Length: 364
Image 1: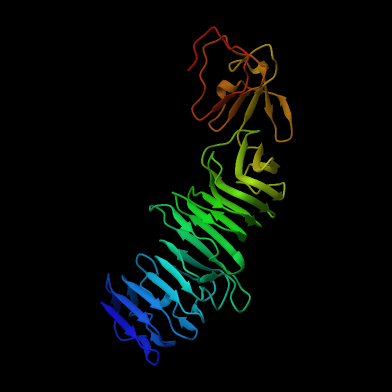
Image 2 (image 1 turned 90 degrees about the vertical axis):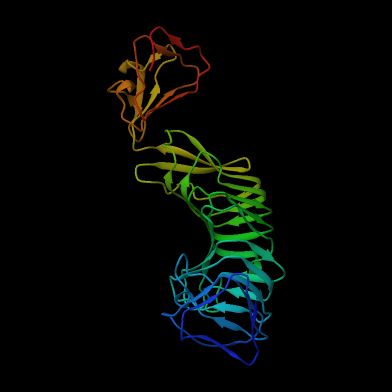
């Protein structure tokens, strides 16, 4: 079914909760809106096309059914004068699939901190999204599909190719295209961003860092600002290098000191066209072999431990290390096992030596 609101009519939703049925299309060619009840809310299971000849200012989160999300559902933006969703500071709302045919779609008009969650697909057709409102405040875009397929952001959908905050919240990843300049990129829930083109990042926040590079850029990555890691998927060891960005080219640099979980410190540096985080301290004990002649994890005299600033003689053998600790056999050193030994649960032994190990006794 097709429902049409004529240019001179007014759309209101204030007498009863309303659902646009699945498979139905509501064509709104009017810029006139009356009361949308915050009690009797609107649910869109079909498609809404906004196509007036003047600016359409549509209701925000409070007028939309909250379960599962406060969502406008499937939207088509086809208004050369633009469409703005009214939101107060700190609010959010969702769309499912959005088609940008013409005009500019603005998701926050009365304060910063607003987030537009895109749960489905984005189809480009000449329209754009802006994350800078008329008042100069900014809001963010969150590609939000935790259990669904990977999402794609087409090229040239942001005004000025600029987005204030781009959050990736999709376990299967998001693919971006074209040129994008982002004040902040946030990668959440083990999400990854693959960008085909040039990408400018003023700050990078990674909710959970895995062992793989979560940000890949085929063109030039222009970087600045800080790197924040909220948690590690697996416990990193002292001195470990973790690649954050793999790029076709690299310009600029992040602040050297990364913001890491409590007890960790690390430095961020460019390495060729990659950006690498090096762990410089952990909250767990770290051991490294002291001599090339041979080191047994049962013998305290064979090891050094890191005290937060440097390596000193160990006071206990690595075989008694607590969970989370790391044991490093350095290049050129021999790993001996001249007594029955057990690597404790939760402890990582990193053997970076090609020297032949000598195992006279059994290891667990």
